[in-house]
Length: 103
Image (cartoon, rainbow, N blue to C red; front, top):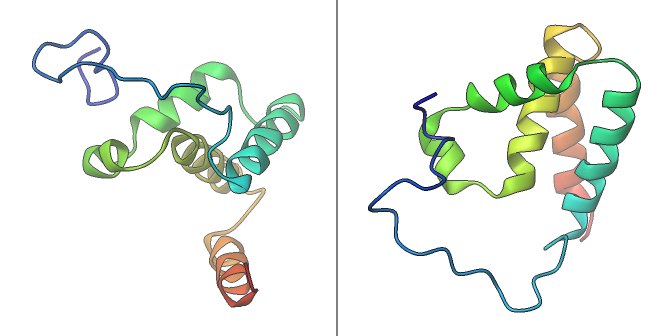
């Protein structure tokens, strides 16, 4: 592998500086994505290799500027659309609905 997602140990990327007392989830939506992964994976919608490959297909610029659990969300959305369990219109509709709701 030699893609943007394989940065671990690559020279010139600078030091890794983990946050002191870093939380498991930085935002509530990340906890939700984690739960969705468990249910979609256990539900047989994809396997681990398919999940990783879906992450590897992300646009490299988007991959580099997005948080960890957004990679997971991208993979789940891609795979569920690919399998016909969701449509892009359903995802867009839900995103529009969430944008209207108060935080």
